Image 1: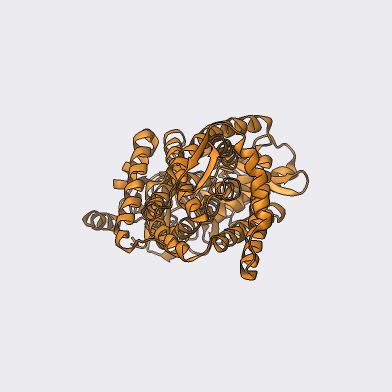
Image 2: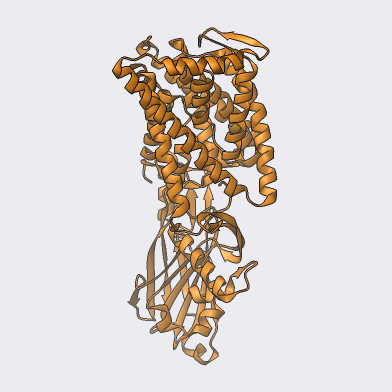
Amino acid sequence: MDLMYFYLPVAMTSINIFYPIGLGLAVGILSGLFGVGGGFLMTPLLIMLGIPSTVAAATDSNQIVAASTSGTYAHWKVGNVDFKMGFHLLIGGFVGGLMGVQAIKILRAMGNADFVIKMTYVLMLGIVGTYMFIESLQGIKKKSKGHGSGVKAEKESAIGRLLKSLPLQTHYEKSGVAHSALIPIVFGGFVGILAAIMGVGGGFLMVPVMVYILRMPMHVVVGTSLFQILFTCIEVTFLQAYTNHTVDFILAALLLLGSTLGAQIGTVFGRKLKGEQLRILLAGIVLVVTVKIVLELTLTPELLLSQAGGH
Amino acid sequence: MQKIKNQKSKIKIVVFLIFEFLILNSALAGELSAQLATKVNHDHIKIDFFYHGSEVNVSGASALGTDIVIKITSPEVRQILRRKGKAAGLLWMNVGDLEFASTANLYFLYSTQEINDILSQDEMDRYVIGYPALKKHIEVAQINDEDEKNRWFNEFIKFKELSRLYAISFGQIILNQTESGQNYSIKLNWPYQATPDEYLVTVYAVKNKKVVEKAEARMVVEQTGIVKTLANMAKNNGAVYGIISIVAALAAGFGVGIVFRKGGGGH
């Protein structure tokens, strides 16, 4: 018997408790800082620790429920959650998720699901990461030179005219923006489809949608994204536990010990950073993950066989 | 903690399981008959909350001058594994499944000397001893080409060895001469990766490149306590298990949020 090790009843493996707690803390900090669930980082790291891929993905959803609750609560206390926008994004995300699940079923029947999933992953991460990185860098440069954002204002007015012509115009007080309610619903749906195809929560896609399309302030984006992720992950956790029996409660408990604390620390740090700084950091992480996936796809793997399940 | 202490004390109790004596070589029957015996201490491994593998001792007696081969296997099953290959000729990803029939999830083989030096290939094939014999025994579905089968069998062994579920080694078995023959014993680190199951320990006494006697014992690995309760609930009562997992996560998230409340503030 070793008190440093816990046996995980669903993953059916033993793990040094410091690994999941440390991992939870690190991903929780990212969650509180950027408003992402961190599934795109946590799941591969859990697999590296010997957790079966299906259990890793399902359990990660469970711990994100805790981390995003902690993060949403911390952001709500300081008035950084736009509940109205969050609900509209959730409606779209829910419908998009259902559509994405159907798309995956069709792709699996056609036999090329893995190829589409991997390509979607690399392209979305690459495009989002690169765009966010360049835009944030320009933002930081402009601010340091003391210029206003004349070009941005022009762009905003062009997009603004298009958005304002749509019905169901709604004022989102907390974000200080006015949009047709259809905008967050449609883009929430778009992220929902991609998230379901890629098997992730979609926080790293939702954040850029809120920043660049919905023009929400970065700090409200983080809180609102966490609020939306919370509900998505509650749904995913239940479905995984009910249909696949792959949620490991003990592993989730160890992860959330770190991630709930990390989310609070991330929120505190986030308040000290500017919007551009937050975005460039997130863009950097997204790009590193993209490079890692590209390397995995191109370098000959050590093992050519793996447990069935997951992708 | 009391439970753990009880389990520890149980581990120390040596349990004799099954003594099974088979005479396999009539020419040697007179001098070797019924001399091979085996016992496994800690034959009932309980997986509890702090389980991180275990230690298993296999020991017994055999006729003087025989070599010993110990094989530990789980029941044979059909295993389906994901196969990686190059999609579109350049990107590595899962390209399908491979089915390995008649395979044990766990296969350990220990011998007093290098296995090829003490057993003929025919005997190894007959008793499925060693990887070449295992290759002939296992069926890889949908693959008829011999080179392809070899390739995927080698990948299968690599995958299992990295998972600590397959191992072959020699020289770890200790032999001690006695008045009536010899005693053998080996101390094994039982991996935590071995799933709950009933495992078969087969001991072969070997002489002149042939198996002359065989004895078997069984050992059970099972989940217990909270590990068993949670595993059963996850499997048989997924909805309740899911709701409990969600409520616990929500409570933990709010709990930490409230603890940090005093530290909060605007920006």
